[in-house]
Image (cartoon, rainbow, N blue to C red):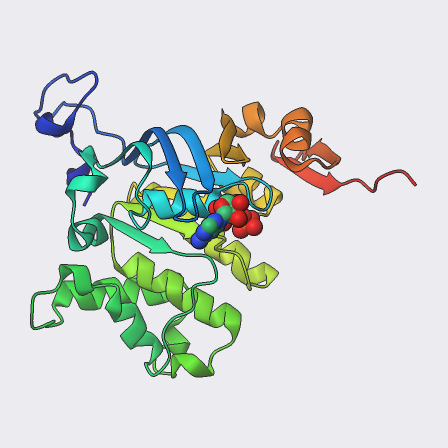
Length: 287
Ligand SMILES: Nc1ncnc2c1ncn2[C@@H]1O[C@H](COP(=O)(O)OP(=O)(O)OP(=O)(O)O)[C@@H](O)[C@H]1O
């Protein structure tokens, strides 16, 4: 797992300092001047530079159509950049096949719901397939990973239920549990809080934070909830029109001016005196 993040000599274009136990880790994800186009010709991302390290949770923010889901597709290898390069754990993404990528990176796309016809446990077990051999034999490690993911997502009591019988929010948690069971180094989530009520969204963000801290996971989450981003993220990438408007800490990026410029909306930016976190309130346009 995290040993995959140790520096690999052959693939390091910059600042190579050698291998060995004290060698610094490669970034879990690195985008160098990445642009992306859809087959229609539309340029959806332009010259994105981003470095995500193990143990970091990045929130990707921006208005509708900014390029957030496109960024997820590029990082997860489902859309090839039209220019620039993506590195996963120090190696070019383009040199990996899908199975190799799936051992290191789990992705929960926007509005992803699990396939019907299976129980919750069976769906979560599907997350183990990149680690299983041709006969798909379930190992003790697979069982442990599935139990852990079910538990983390509060799904133990639902584990034998047919997934098709669950609510939208419960199905969303099953998709996230499957991604956790994959036990990669990198977790990519597109709007993980969608469909979740307030308790379950808090629980989910707590789970993600715990995974990031305990397993030194590198996580990139597309969020529309600015307050959740300010509560849980270490770093923010703010997109607009396919370009990175700003990236950095919450204090650097989630300012009145930068958010206004990105969203073209008035937001009140407050600071909670209890824990010093920022909060955001939409302000009605003057009539
Ligand atoms: N399959 C596609 N083919 C062509 N253009 C696309 C495709 N998917 C997205 N786009 C375009 O690329 C741009 C970025 O879209 P993207 O879905 O990445 O935005 P987003 O920031 O995730 O938006 P939202 O917040 O609404 O989900 C938009 O202009 C969109 O119309």
